[in-house]
Length: 102
Image (cartoon, rainbow, N blue to C red; front, side, top):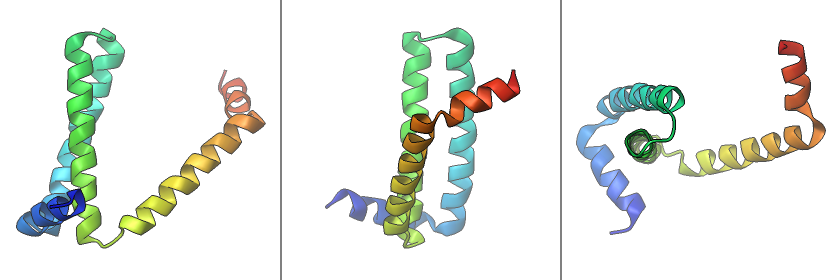
């Protein structure tokens, strides 16, 4: 079975509402892992926790993209956002923003 078929199988088993609840839960756990990593630094434990939660968010997001039939829309949106970030880096957007917040 291809990976997208595995995501669809899981998503169809649990359904949209449960997958959305799971995404919320996993996002909160990822935020906690990020907090731990920033507070405690790059230790084997904080690194492993961060990777674990990033994987969980990615999996549930992929599951939902099958249910919502938005895999292509997500791919396009990610590409747009990456291009926008690169453009902002090149034009100094973030440096200007840091100066304003200082």
